[in-house]
Length: 63
Image (cartoon, rainbow, N blue to C red; front, side, top):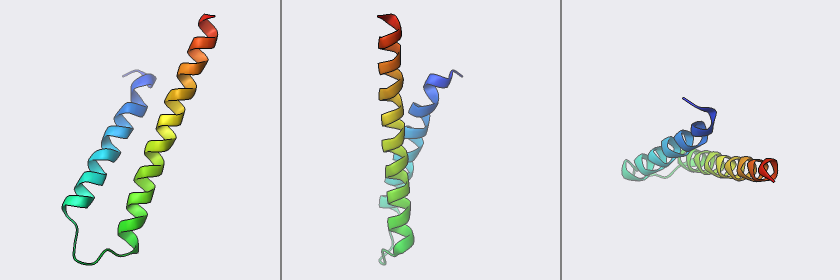
């Protein structure tokens, strides 16, 4: 597996976790639910920024 694929895999896993959290929701949305949602969302945002940064580096190298 190449290093370039790791962020996409991590984003996919986090999206699956968010969907599962929303499907198996209980009547009580406690602090743990919101912490999981924020953690997964922040991981996704971090990986998107990382992908963008690597693409910008690749473009600069090719110029």
